[in-house]
Length: 539
Image (cartoon, rainbow, N blue to C red; front, side, top):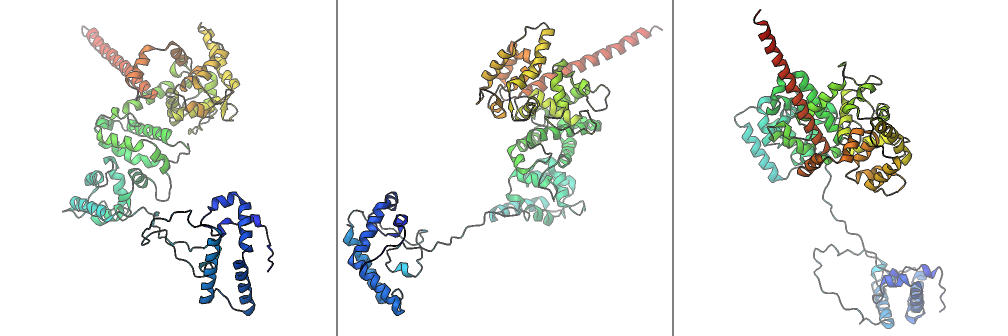
């Protein structure tokens, strides 16, 4: 019987040939071998008889695949074909294994391919039960954890119909493991009817029924602070916890007689939080940003530490004092706004006019001030944090935008020269030995080591610890001279406290200076009073 092979033999899938002695990978890598084997199989007499029987059954209207006898004969004939062509002694048998409960055991669908067909057997995929991994309202607590929490709740609510707001601090800290200054905010979150009391069932329904028990601390804080219909935190969401911190923290008790400074302290803490954590600069703090930052650790620290000034991140009163006094020194008319002429006096006229112009063009950051051409207190907080810690990530981004005149994401030699020209002129006016820009450019590129020798990217700056000095060279003459002189006192300070940031060191120095000035002023006022009394006494 002559058989005509129709189709492209080279496109034959080698996996369809059930050849245990040949690897499918080997056949796929050599398609001509598969063609030869397939042609050889077709030329066998057994194959011809098999095809004839199948065609005859089709013409008679019967299917050999539905007949047990025919299927058995087909199975036998086809099983005998391969041993006649290949030896079966080349592959050792697999080790016996238990098939009970094995995920590799599949059910075979009854059909023609289960009856000895030379085509590859198609197995029915296993339908595995995947446990639920997403819960819209949070993962429900395990029974053991739930029982432990209920026991603690019963202990706190025992003998009470409910807890009032002044009794809720212990439950906030012991049961919820939250900082104690969250108690008022959490109380109001549960007491939606403003009844002034929270029952046991209300607390259980919110904390356990709402699945807050199984959330991580950052998610718990985020859920408690945010508004119900929002997916982010705003500055106003932090005010309630800061008001409670001001009212309860022993390190801030002295501010209770000056409510205006309490409000300024709270604002400064919020601005610092958003400066460092809200890297999208949208004013909307997301859960992801909250988890990536160090705010949660700082909240826990301030809750345990009685000395507020030891909490350097966000909450230090000394840091607030320095920021506010610096702003007050520049704001000569005390309208709580700063213009260009005010800012140019910052740091004893350390900044160039060109960089001040870029700041007021609002390139690095849009001003929140509603008065055109004026910088408000929040804008100043962003400025001073960036100016005094240029190596921090937000500081680098702030000044990079200022120097990047065309906004193409790279700093070119022409852009850097534009800002350095004024520095060079100021050095000449101060009888300082001028340093040519060509030498400065070589120094900058050696310091940063950019990937591309023709420009500097923000990524290059973030990969270098000395990157903040690049900006000092370009527009802050005082810090540029200090960097060139390599003050040994500052170097020793950095080695003694490597964990302190540039901002921490600056704030510490400035607080000491401002405190000494205030002490001298108080002493002079006191001596003046004494002198006046002694002078007027004889009369």
